[in-house]
Length: 307
Image 1 (cartoon, helix red, strand yellow):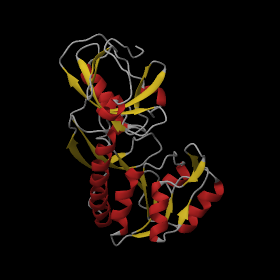
Image 2 (image 1 turned 30 degrees about the horizontal axis):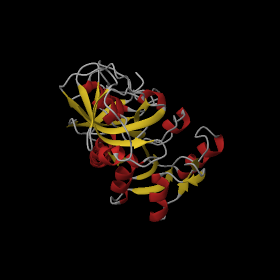
Image 3 (image 1 turned 90 degrees about the vertical axis):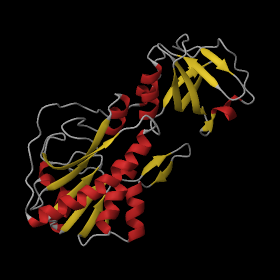
């Protein structure tokens, strides 16, 4: 089938590669405009653009997907189907209803659970045991379209948003191929979403602030769900410190207070249990193991993170 691919972040790469390896004809890749990034505010391309450039594919980067000129460009391409994977803008009805076979979206949850922009993160933070991928025939609502196919996977205690995203991206690529194959044969029917709707709103940096009064298990889920972005963080002696990986301990302690500060171990009390910090990132520094962080720092038991 002749298609246009809409996608932006790393999560969209494996589905795009699956399409490239197939017999489907990718007319163009639509992705977000280049943005300034980092301290030097250098212009940076997104992962999907970089991938498409290497493959020599046609790339479109509209500032606004509702721009009439872009919509006309889509009409001129006349795709039979549009595939959307974490594109980053809401498509207007003119594009949703443009392809003869519709727009297929890969969503990183088992819909109708976790509609919205950050389903992977919130599934981990909320302590879900399972999640998955849904292929959906898009309508004009927010992740409300008919379900085509779904595949589930377990969430382990070690999963971060980064590791789970990679696994779901692989599942998404495989599921997309099955979905398009069945659509081409005409033997798949979109099913309406049932009850059990939940939401996964866009993450903000402020969502990563550690509330030390919560339990150690809740905080580990927050840390994992915020890794790699935006990162869970706390303040110690006015320094903003990100925590990228930690283990929950049963030992008791006061919320936010350093219970152990040895040569290679940093344990902080929580509302229930304690947190043994494994990977950490001081302000302006790279991520490092806690042993490296403790070197040259005069941390003492009884010091307290801002609660």
